[in-house]
Image (cartoon, rainbow, N blue to C red; front, top):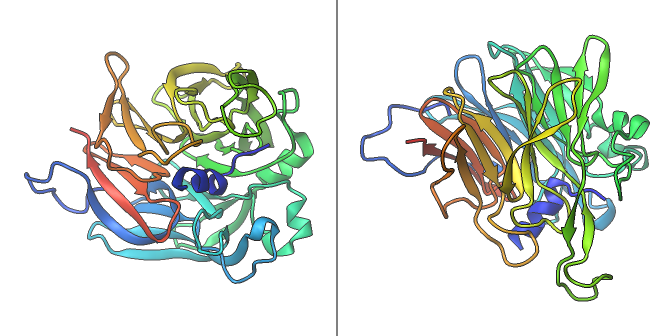
Length: 368
């Protein structure tokens, strides 16, 4: 079982500073709108903000579960004046008939200096899906983006890696499934978090290898009609790593959504040092969607919701996690299905309404 972003958002919904902010502006500001299912964010060479738009699907509704395919995904640049420019378009996208809850371009990350970018396109299914539905052949992959805005081909195929290796095979309820959801290109390697495969894949000169697998846990069964076991019975919960970022210490930090039953407070931030087993760095979160470190080394955690995905929708959360001291929620109650996060020295930038076509937006939130 996997929980891809499209399905999770369906359950949940049941910038670099554009200019010097006015002194009176103390709350969140919309700096870009009209986006199609906006997801991961990163800063480019000149400080512009780039966002992966998962698109709005299309008119080909022959996929399972009434999902619709189209080439409406994009990588969009937002400059210092707030102008949007689609740097890359015509990327694969699968969405509901309404265009929401899309799977498509899911994250973007630039190398040191911001000259070379990498972006992921999700899949949310078995790798064989691409052969069964040839229109999805470009999904489940890692792409390279040149400074000119041209896509320089496929840099990796996380879905194929999952199909050939199934890194989480020793975990309970694991199955072959792939949904590359996050990428970090800030170090010597390019690393991908496969939310479907429950694994972290590292790409280098020798090809891909498994950086780590976040272990599954046990969670109390929910109280829902016709569930096969009594409420409170411990059941396996998949890790579903949705985000990966290299920390100031050189280690990798991974945020997990967690799979069903999406326990409130059951998600963690994990720390991975290559060659060592993952360790829990911070606990007590819910449905983590993204992570970012501030320039002072402070960790920021983005939650898609405030509580379990089972039940009525709840607001997302942006939480400051200092090395010492209490955690702080920024802009409480203002986030709706947030899906991406980037941080500079003054602001956090959040992809908000990340499950909606045409209504997605980027919020700028003061850090102080």
